[in-house]
Length: 68
Image 1 (cartoon, helix red, strand yellow):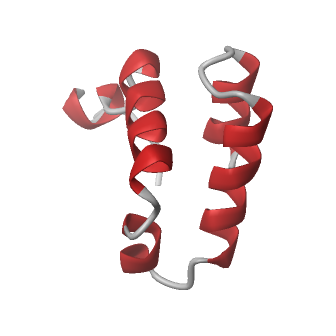
Image 2 (cartoon, one colour):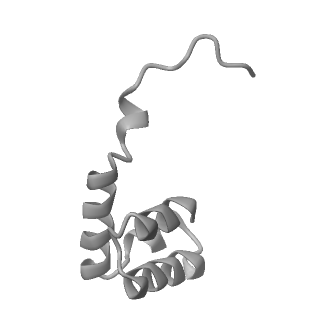
């Protein structure tokens, strides 16, 4: 939920979108249920994720000096 809060803070989501997405995720019991989010909310979340470059961590090599 921290990422959603940051999206709201950066004004990438409206308060209503934030509440709707947070409610959907909170009620979802499985990853599949999250993926079944209504299309308008999913598009909004996807766009905000791109604008925040959320996937950037996935493209970085792991830090070899990271502790256990």
